[in-house]
Image (cartoon, rainbow, N blue to C red; front, side):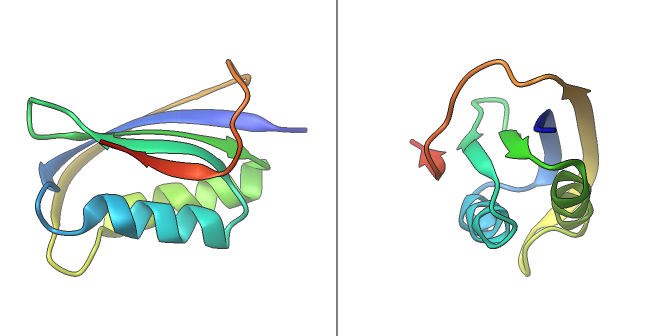
Length: 91
């Protein structure tokens, strides 16, 4: 059964290839959704897929990209709220 997460990641997560990192990991896990920078300096992620793949993505979010520093990852699990085609970066 498909699930969805909504995540907000704080720390040094902008200008460090974090969105590309999230997109690459999500696509590798066959997840759908998007990632985008938020004006407050955080990154926002909505991802859909099976629970195991989403849990792996959450682990990746905690680790972060090579140049990032993740201070906090706030995750909410829920039923899917919309349909996605692929995993995109929202600019």
